[in-house]
Image (cartoon, rainbow, N blue to C red; front, side, top):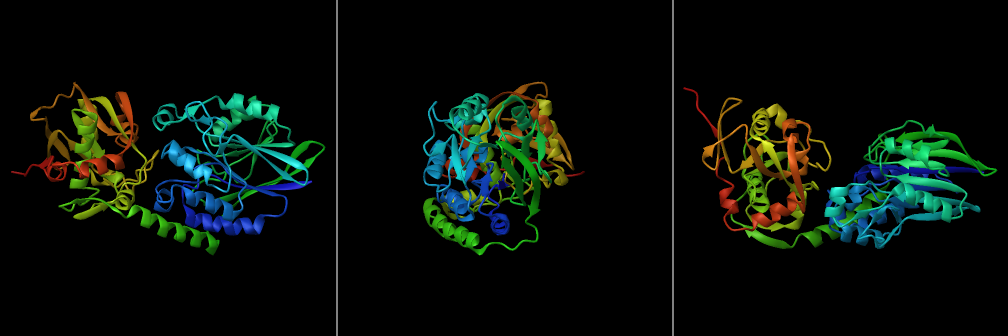
Length: 458
């Protein structure tokens, strides 16, 4: 008997592309088709997702005909409560065999499902990435997915085992070689694009890139208890027309989200403008807030974490999400003065500021200028001439305690910042710091005080 799997992974809320995926699904599917997603379908940079408590994701998957999705790290980034709400109300099962809440099952999340097509039983198991520090911060706990996969395979009668694996294609190889009984692995997490499926110890393994740019297709036969790959490929969405039903669902949820998120939180009496290259008050405010919140010597943030400023007047949750979509945690670390100074020097180069800041959790447009709190930096052209820390001389050999984001703590552009020690991560995102300190007395006014002092030529 012949079957087909249509699959996606790491769509990251690029739902305009997903509308094209739906068109391709309609072209490809038949009565013997299973449709699956390998995680990171829901990226909370979208107000339509965040403002509906994740409801949009499940409704899109249902409309497109999906049978299941595994929980990726982006489905967890808003914490346990949001995942529970999203999974509980989703018409499409959310799967994870290894992600728990306080050692117990997460409401609405199943370890596996069994899908029957013409008396063939398909066991579909989901796995989620192990991110010990961040999962713990967000209220999750992990168990060994290897042991859970073995247990599920052993305890549940089935004919074909499919693993929806959001832990990277490299780890897929380890699992395929170590765990007997898996027939097919659909990959996610590392955004790999396989033009055709590969075989790892006779296990079929496929991955369809990212951002909804491709639909993965696996065709196989099941005869005499054997799964045999017959064909596999990916289809590009580049020249495909979008499905209007998907676009209508997005628009309906956008209206709901805007209504939910548009209530005034508080008011500010000055416009905090934004700039990627020059010092700007809104990034200064975040640096000040981080320094105060984490009780550090220095606050440090890149303006590229923001997509814009905030005008004088009312501040809403909608505006905060629009300008600060990145799920990046407030983070403190210790770093030697010379490593900090080298990063600050790089920040004087506009070409560096305008680089693509892509990295884990980063949702901005470009890297942006480094902004500081607790420091006064004098510079001439593109070179720092003097630094003061609370009006005291800067010591290049001293370790300073810096409040920043986990992105800067481990980034590879302002690379010397990665030479840090003793990092401490907080559950609060940078957007939370912005919300708190926009409404805290004196911080808006303080944000307009210059920290970068340009020296004039003689």
